[in-house]
Amino acid sequence: MKQVFKRPESMTAKPFHFCPGCHHGIVHRLVAEALDHFSLREKTIGVASVGCSVFLYDYFAVDVIEAPHGRAAAVATGTKRVLNDKIVFTYQGDGDLAAIGTAEVIHAANRGDNITIIFVNNSIYGMTGGQMAPTTLLGQRTTTSPYGRDCNRDGYPIKMTEMLAALEGPSLVSRVAVNTPGNVKKARKVIRQAFQMQVEGKGFSFVEVLSTCPTNWGMTPQAANDRIAEEMIPYFPLGTLKQKDVIDVL
Amino acid sequence: MTTPKKVFTKGNEAIAMAAINAGCRYYFGYPITPQNEIPEYMAEHLPATGGEFLQAESEIASINMLIGAAATGVRAMTSSSGPGISLMQEGFSYFAGNELPAVVVNMSRQGPGLGGINATQGDYFQSVKGGGHGDYKLIVLAPHTGQELYDLTIKAFEIAEKYRILTLILGDAILGQIKEPIVPWIPEKTAGDPDRDWLITGAEGREPRLIKSLFLADGEMEKHNWHLQEKYDRIERDDVMLEEVDTDDAELIVVAFGSVARIVKSAIAQVRKAGMKVGLVRPITLFPFPRKRLREIGGRTKKFLVAEMNTGQMVEDVQLNLPGDCEVEFYGRPGGSVPTPEDLFEIISATYEKL
Image (spheres, rainbow over the protein chains, first blue to last red):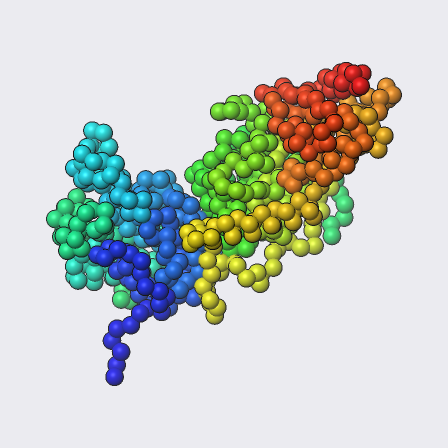
């Protein structure tokens, strides 16, 4: 009998620790599938960030360096400059990448460093217990915006994908979601393209994935999924904003 | 081996030259005075070695790029000065937790704040007491001549690899900017062992590896800290470096490091001519601090003078490690006023007269 579904080789057998309804597990799997697709597991180095995603070293069967908070892009740059025949990716949340690590990601993108960044945007600080993130939507209540995010005090949710797409360096800048089977399929394709860019030496590739955080949003998994469609996608529209030419091998 | 041939060069360039000759192939840095000749030399010369120079967007990025490079096992470095070194403290702590080897140069400048660019030793505490968070140490080397900048840079790469530790070279504008003759040389070993079992190279045909400093499980963090401490103890046991001048018969010992020690040497030569029995202890490693040797010397000589270009930092380590019956005086010049040999002659003579 033909096996039609299995764990990607780039993943370990360790069960995810993520909360029910969290999208990290789906995103992890899509990244692992992309690595498998190009047979990259044995030549890939993952850079873990700080937040719920730090434990990616438990789930990916690749070499991993754990970066300080926000510094994953700089660490990845250092590794890739030495091992330019290997595949280097970071996996960062919105607090890590869009607040404390803004400078590092912008300059890695601007240099066109040939790395891949998976940016998981769930509009909140997950691991520390639900504080306001730079991507928290206006009016969204968090433990540090208990009356709702106010643009006069806190500014507006930051659009990293749009910002990075304005730079010359990146080969691919895209925003996807994994809240529906259709969106998962689109996200799978874009994440593969991102790694393909790196394989082909085209430079910095960046995929923002809109993600849930049911626990800190105070929602059921279903309600959290619905919020992606109803509140997040309207503000953070899906789509590829920048893409260098690539041969379609998918 | 190259034929010993003198070159006339700035201290900063001596460091850069030594680093390349020691096999350093990657440099990440950000401009700041008074160390700019290091990145400039690297930018010019590293490409020809097959390595790479990269100007980072900040010292925070520099030190983190260095983490990423060091994890692969190559010899790599960064350099900066006070304000930039402050920004790197986060990374220093991660280097310690991750147990990665690399070399950092601090051509220090006055502080606090933006301070000034002249010579100072105000970064002693930051260097040896841990400017970053957590229980950790760096190896701190304090050269006092151009030749020693060169020699200790080579030593820094070797010792960093030996212990999987960050090694800091602490200098100042006097050392970085003065041009003097040095004899370059090439060490036998110019790269770390490629078979080290922790190198991040991609998990080809082996189990995946992990470089991390997060330890959440009960007891793991304490275990890791005791492991690090055991390493620091070994460093203190095996790798202390100091220079002694005329300590055998000395009735007064001056303790000084770096550029001040060099000026003290001139002063002591004059003081000796005047018939005063004065010696010098010059810690070359600030961590590990030569505390055992100081204790021994303090068993015989009872009077000490610590001279520093700050308001009194290393003097605390001297006091802490001498026998209780020793007297320790302090002479400090913070803020870029460099003492002359005559100044030091006066202060040493006056301290000696009080014996």
